[in-house]
Image 1: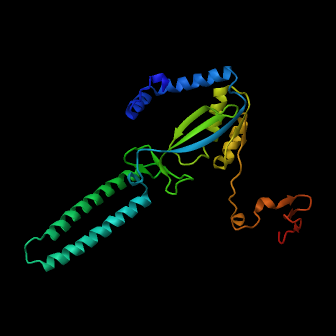
Image 2: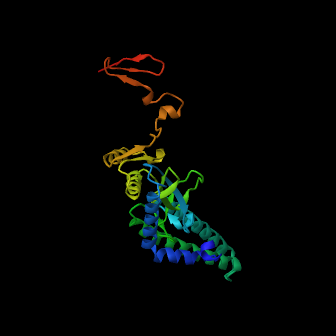
Image 3: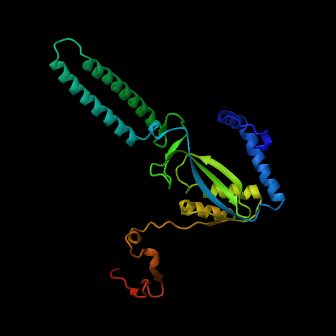
Length: 267
């Protein structure tokens, strides 16, 4: 805050500045990394890559998928049917003079029918969405899972690569994809270019594991260090998975974890 003389800009001021000066900010970040490299602060050849889910201004209620839209339409249609039944009951009980109850039910029906029309319009927009999602407030935001919130967030996936020497961010990008597995190569190459390192080791968690991404990294002079996810249903049940059984080509058998040999039972 010392740089601004203790001034506290409104969030809109900051957002407008970032929007109007996006390319200049990017160049400033690149030059900062270059200066850090010249000073020997970065450039150790090892980066850690991680993704963070950041919430957008778009709420869950303003984000739609086909399944969510179908559920909301079903709820509105059920409410319309219920109000129609109540209105029919009220009409049969009245003497011809409109009662406050009838007026209230009529107004509520009109509101529900309006909501149903809005949902049908959303459905038409959803049909043209490439990824099956539609966010009304922030069109680029997407619903994505997080480890800390069972509902997940509607927002963005911020990818960052940190030089492990002093934990300085050397490359970053923002995407609305809810997973990390397609970003290993992109971030590792960006970090390699930013630091000018001829060879690099890229560390990432199992969310980045994807065979083609790892192969492409190796071809680009980047050694990916990414653990393989445990997808074995046997291990999920507390049993041994396939990796626990070692193939022995000299005998065409498998050795189980307790040292026994598994013979072929049929050709």
